[in-house]
Amino acid sequence: MSEKYDVIIGLEVHIQSLTNSKMFCSCDARYFQKEQNTLVCPVCMGLPGALPVPNKRAIELCILLGLATGCDIESEIRFDRKHYFYPDLPKGYQISQYDQPICSDGEITIRDKEGENKVIEIERIHQEEDVAKSTHHTDVNGEYTLVDYNKSGVALIEIVSKPVINSAAEAKEYCAKLRQITRYLGVSDADMEKGQMRCEPNISVQEKGRWEYKDEKILPIGDYKLNPKVEIKNIGSISAVEKSIEYEVSRIIDDLEAGREIKQQTRGWDPEKGETIFQRSKESAEDYRYFPDPDIPIIEVTQSDIERISEQLTELPDIKVARYITEYGLSEYDAGVLTSERKTAEFFEDLVNQLEDKNMVKDAVNWLTGHIFALSKAKGIAVYELGMNVQDLASLISASSKKEININKAREILTESIEKSVDLNHLLNENLGSIVSDVESLTEVAQKVLGDNQQAVEDYKAGKESVIMYLVGQVMKETKGNAQPEVAKNILIELLQ
Ligand code: ZN
Ligand code: MN
Image (cartoon, rainbow, N blue to C red; front, side):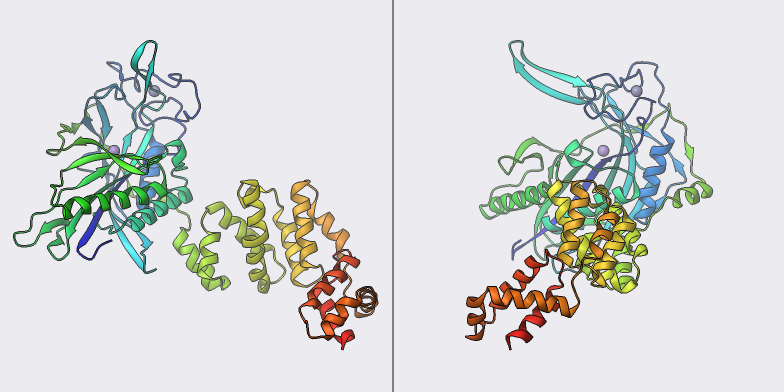
């Protein structure tokens, strides 16, 4: 970022848990595109006398994420009230956790900009509830705000990192990795466009060599005065995490260089303008008047609970990548691409298990990352949603690997089977017999092609060797794509000589 300054970033991330019902009541938690204020009850409306009942599945998911990130799991779960006043918070407080989060001291490994592994320590993962949604309007009635309580009380997990992230790129990596892990585990869909994951970095810029990270605190060295933190609220996309931090860091450095005082403050991100906007200044830490929620009894987490939840742990992306590299000999890049989503990885593994020969794995990878990814991209859906039968696909790839079918023909029939929902195996069987690879019949075709293309023949003899590919193309045309191009090429060269 700069020769003179260090960037110090801590991240708070909120993700919505993948539960059917809300955190403390039985209202439906799947509020997306539902009519406003239809998924509500006295508990999530904050009506007097209503009693919260904790969602067991939500707590399991929180523990599952903690286990996957190497956290210590608390054996007694307590909930606290966090007070603040806002129209989208009907009770006047949010049920959250204060000094005893369910999970603490975990880590997530990312790649830094040198491509080296970097461990980002997680301070805590705690369980809380979401607030309602306010929308602001201006019309003939003047200015007013409407509140939709469908989202009020939806289970929310907050993940707080230690301030050990040192660039916008690292922050982006961390958020992407966290999202990937929560999706792998089924803890959350973490769809940022639907607001299911929100990132809030706090950033400070300090002079190099004048501060240290000690006892988990940023401390000044000597008479250095630390610059205060700036927080960016509610970032709704992974790319905006990087862009907003880059913007903010250069804004702070400009102020420092100009000798302007840096004030502790909260800012928002305007994705259209690509800039952060001042929201409010923070003179001191906010006083939320936390106290234990007297309505919710302490929940014991036993060893057998932990064992039961551990059974839901799945092979996580880092482990998968390492295994693909050693077990299948994949490049790190290919392994990363194939494990980006759990279902894609599972599709790949199913496919590998169906191949005739383990030596065909490399071909299968090329098929997936090449032609099949292109098809899925064109359709805007995932590979596993293309409707391919894994066994039939394995037969096609095997046939192509054994050169029983021309690769272009094989691609063509795969596309056809997807586009027209035709049985792939049927198409493969139809085309298997038609391959023209015997030298005798191909020689006949090649002779005809040479006869028809005198100019090309002369060009070739005059030293323009690239013309051979044109001639191979003509052979492919004559055989309706059923020749093996390399065989055809060899025959053509032999005839030409
Ligand atoms: Zn409710
Ligand atoms: Mn929170």
